[in-house]
Image (tube, rainbow, N blue to C red):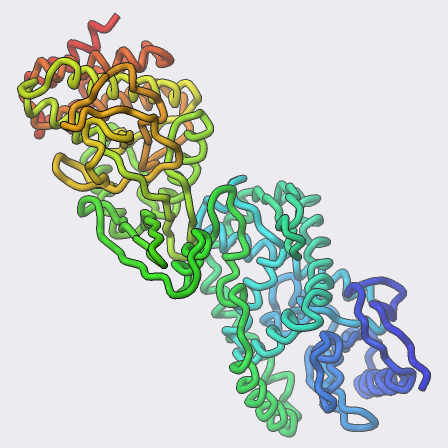
Length: 634
């Protein structure tokens, strides 16, 4: 037998990549005869044709058809399936060249034809034409899939998230499998097994061309980050899209539904003269569906987002997101997990404790839900004309992730991120024990100094002073928190005052609160009776952890900084009548803040509009004391 080895050949180019398929001379001649005869029957010129499907991808059976895409010039019928049964079995999809271009550009045919170019194909004539169509189609796939992803979380559009090109393929395949459930068989067979690496590489070559073209068009800014670091197949890119790309996401669901319906109409129209085709295709699909059920479908087919990479933690999604977190913490199958609700009624968070073979790990799972959004909506109504908080769950999750990392970059302790899920809108943090600053302040103010010696009270005020210094560093770096409640500050230390208290995300004295953080506490000594053996000497910046960054933002506006100051002071002094303690707290905070903070921001915190939201829960004398201390601060 005389064999001709075809490696993306036909047109003298490498479109379709390196396809290790050997086409015999007899096969090549017979396929040429079939397509020439079909073109002659309709009086059309052949623009290009290629082979695709199981034979090219490497999973064909002995009786599998030769799947042929035949592109014709000015084909009046636009699209048609022909089932050839002479010499060899060929399934020929005939399509008009202009229609194919429009299918690639704007899904004129529901991507019924252009969708075949997602996968490896073997050009047999004029491969440059198909390469152009493939690049055009994959450019649109990248834009649509990226914008749809960005619509689920704006965090994707930051440099914190990098995307492998494989994401676009698998995300698109997931959508196409919903339209054509039987097609999942061919997708799984193409991208798993012996030929998976080769097929993926060939498909990715088209996506690389498309990505570079988008960069040249100015639609994205691109930075290649290399592979996954373990010799894997994924090459990650940080992509910063322009507004044109972001605008595609909101229409994704309706668009896919319309395309699905159109694709089935085109399918029916293309096979309109072949009842035999329908019968044989139905039998083949049934067999494929049975076979694919016997295969283990890779997780990236069901949840392509797990292919994403973030700068801290891992990306989890799907039904087994908790198992993915457990594996990242070193647990294997058979671990137990117990969930406990924590925080106040507005804190959509839970403490998950995992155990296996005597080992225990705890993580705080924070959910960014629409239910919690009601809290921020209510606050916006209450603070109308004064402040406006972010209410979108997706943006609050982005603020949290970015805030944790930006603030830690300043040398300030923040929670360690274990995992993030874009689909389920949650972030998992490592659990730490500690005590919220709000509880310590409440204890000091409620006791009015009774039962506290000067040393202990000095310790508590030093914590407040340290937080003031930390907040001033944040402001000096161009960031604001906007939600500076003292309950969002966790004091963590070994031994000493309150060290045995379990902390959670709740507000108010007496509530338990789960602490999340990422650093080591300072080593403090305790006298064993709950009293601190020394106060100011043991205070260090790695004892205070800042939590809850849902309202974090970059800002150098003086009024934003002033609000952060006022918010902390007024929240700390709700309901108290202890004017002496209140004045001491304000002075301690301002002493710390003045180390790096703006004098204008301090003065701005005294404006009357800032105490009005807190007025119903504050004693008038305390409000007056706060404003007097602010105005008189040197």
